[in-house]
Amino acid sequence: MQVELTIAVARIGRWLLLPTFIACLASPAYAFIAYVSNEKGNTVSVIDTDTWTVTATIKVGQRPRGIELTRDGKFVLVAVGDDDTIQMIDTATRQIVDSLPSGPDPELFVQDTAGKILYVANENDNTVTVIDIEKRARLGEVPVGVEPEGMTISPDGKTLINTSETTNMAHFIDTATRQIVANVLVDARPRFAEFKSDSSELWVSAEIGGTVTIIDPAKRAVTGKITFDIPGLRREAIQPVGIGMTRDGKTAFVALGPANRVAVVDATTHQVKKYLLVGQRVWHMAFTPDEKYLLVTNGVSNDVSVINVAALKVIKTIQVGELPWGIAMAPP
Image (cartoon, rainbow, N blue to C red; front, side):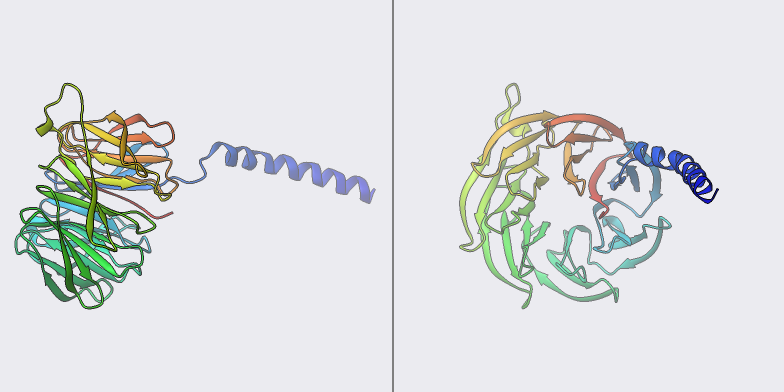
């Protein structure tokens, strides 16, 4: 009798667990969240990457552009340029809970490797502001060239890069001393900078120059340039802005602004492999944490294009707010 009862209970247990098991198979492993700053709409769109839909719209300050999540994923940082501050959005409540004391007209920014210090490009006063994120305190500033915008930091955290649009330079800043240690001349109107994950190269996009400059970070010297040629388009319509690079350093994606394309570049040979047609005036981009997808913002068509990285194919278009500019992905 005891054996029969045990078998019966086991069978009932299996049937009770079956719906849960089926539900687990049907549900996605994880849905990543993307945040898009809408420069003219003064909002941040929240995108669920499982359904590829906007699930929330957050009202923020005037002219939001640079956007990034804190390393712990607790806050979305948004540079609201016309309000001269960086607002902090709680990712749990999706409410603005605080702000950081940036200088005038903050645009792009980058965190140190520990996620404690924020470096902000202040376009209107030609400085990089240094902020303690936890204390919400301004620690100082670094004078740079005219109209600073692009911001990135070396993988070892020792070198900060700022690009100045009018001076046409990439400034190398020692994070320990907060002093400029080198200036590298690039092509006209540099907008964005990106290190390879192994620190072997620094890429700087030049919007008016129509190129991406390759710099040896150790020698602080230009080693090459990537140019773009799209049949049927005038060269001046090809304006590189945002750059995204896979962690293995093999493939790079370059947003080409009013050319409405994203260039796929072999990051080893620096040769363009393909152009992907996206929305109108493509700006910035972010990978999902698993690097299966790349999301790019299209300012004039007010949408986000989703690129399947393995297939090198645009698979989805998501309508967002007015004039989408920056995009950030929540950590897994």
